[in-house]
Length: 495
Image (cartoon, rainbow, N blue to C red; front, side):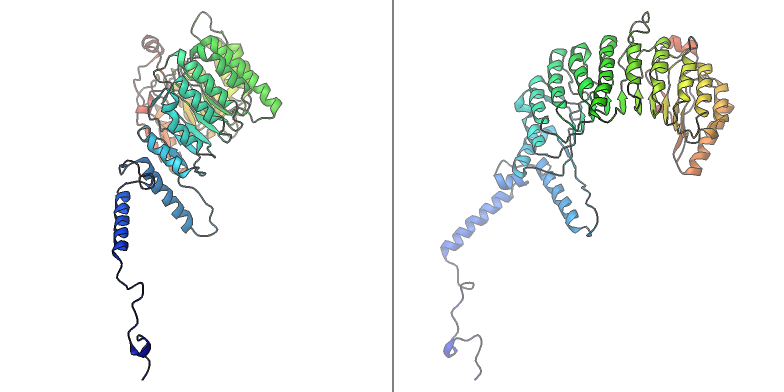
């Protein structure tokens, strides 16, 4: 009789194995306790709740979202075909103030995240006064070892919070961009000056920090010392945004001197040149009886940086005497300039402002964007500028903004006549000039731009004309406007 594989010796059934034996009451009891604990812990909605057994988190908590996004990224990297370069889809950490404590727990649990390059508040307004209040933010920053970009824009930093943040920033040797625009909301000079001094001291220790934005902060003369120290001594600096920081004439002179020092220090250190300077709305001239106050210093500062690519000096109260100096002794030396904004300053037929602008424009072969809105340019100045721009061989000019500059129909006809020589032109702002509806030159420009857009498959734009009766007399009565008013008009577009 063949042996029964399921039978034991003598045909007896084998004893049940340990896998099929009934479990003891003790085993069932311990497993039941374990199951209950698992159910209890899994009720938490995030990894920190499950791991640290902390209070329940909501479904939308920061750490839950971060865990999910990290899993998605790791999965995408693991499943992509071999040989393809890795590109991170999750390189920015957006810090939401309401999730500050949860985010701190997240970083304390996970530790360093090496692929995060950017830390931002995403303009979330948060008031931080003490080291304890900013501690969750610093925990996150400390756990981003390869951080390259940081933004506290829109926050409100107190003195002690700024000190703690500055200490954390000193270790970020790979940091390349720092955005601290509008970061002292509701603060007075007594708080802003020492807080900014602490941050600038940290900036000066960061060898890779090349882009700094401090716009929208009410610095005034109280912050002149730290600001001058930063601008004059930080040789890695390549882009600086100090729009609307309240320099004024006196601090403006100190700032211009610091720019000269920066050029000398860069040359000595072999550092890359300054590429971008944004200095709008700083009222560098406030007294019309002293139109040249500080202008020679500013001209020397600009001439010291001939490799600048972007210069914005809009709405600084510059009068035609000052503009003569700025252009003839400063801007004319920046022959590689690509973007220039001089709007809401004064160009008039008095003096040589128009001819100086035309002479300089003829030496700007790389100029892509020129903004002269609200500048009293007038028909004579516009004619000279148009002729100079059209005379540039292989012109790169793409955008020309001369809204509210007292142009007339002769200027639009002249611009239409040289349109082919401005082969890259794709955007025009002409509203609020002395140009009537149905103007021949304007209609020709509109047609030419539409045709260029269709031929090259690029977006072109010309704004709608508004208020054809607008003139120098009405402009003097109504006052100048800040910036161009054309952004609200649809205009003619082609894409």
